[in-house]
Length: 154
Image (cartoon, rainbow, N blue to C red; front, side, top):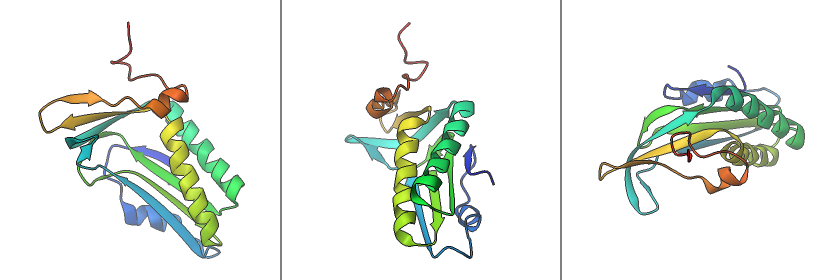
């Protein structure tokens, strides 16, 4: 497994975790981001992610390297889903192993926070009333990510 991956398949959480096991580590922290059934008061049936993979892969690896250096953790990895996902499926998972728990917690939080703002990923919500729309991510816009290509002004 690479440190950062993008997949259109469901994430195998056991395999992911097992790739991070290290005998020198006493702490492991994992974050799973799930598809939930609502957003801003609207019932959501499913989500769809589009990812610009070349940049996302490069930036994802950079974020993980930063976490290892900044927090002194032994291992760090993440997987982000692309495509259509149903309620309760894992859309993203981050795992960090380190000698001690504090560094694992801090590095895990750093990685997910940075992935959310630095990766070129667009989210489309499919609502119970039949509508679907690309969600405008204000934090993404603040970090220089453009709107979804189909939503950009001509």
